[in-house]
Length: 331
Image (cartoon, rainbow, N blue to C red; front, side, top):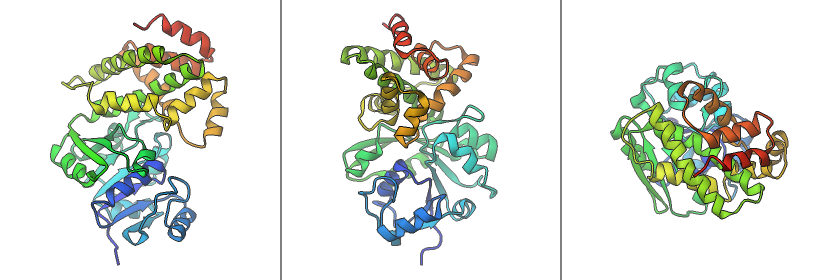
């Protein structure tokens, strides 16, 4: 009987399910943490995640399920975090075991709102986990397309390139290509910012702006992302590569983007509360908008698109009026 998984996924959403599908192409078994024991029982009974990507069937004999997070951490070498950033601190605060000898990979793509930290910072400061043991999974990649086995590309970032390569190799399969990077700061912040941009893209779509303006918005957005990541962590990076520009494009344009969907609802006149309730899923960009605004009070980077989204979501500004003001700032 399988009792000691090497890789364990922490979280049970659509991205967790997609990553489990990918990993099981290359490893014999995985561990998988679910907060809700009833979801585990349903998974075992029906052989699929009862709540997300239900068309993906699993061999449950190759999965060890956990509902005790400390047991999951203790019995694993590699942990893949997929919990939405708004709830990550609550979940991780239950961890009491020493994790400094683990390799923890973030697939969160969000910011920890309690301290306005990217996940790498949070793990390093709260758990004393060395940065060399922290990885980041960057897109562009939607869980829904992984479920359909459509060709997708992932970048694994880690200061220890050897660890990045080892994990990237475990993701390679017929429909996944992987690359490596040492830029955990840039890839994490870029993934946070692109969610805010996707909300902006949705808002202008909801306001019935066309493709021409969308193109101008995204052209300005990648420059906005570059200004911010270069200020926060100034290293040589190619902002046009798929981990940055590609991830921005798919999140801003895709029908599967929950942040774009959320923005579209705001543009059509929904309140933030109503949009959140109707989606039944977390739009990471909503929380990221406030965090980036607060972080940028220190850095003072010119972020007109992110600030426009902040003014709409948190400042009570009328979306149509705020976007009109934004159009005067774009080139």
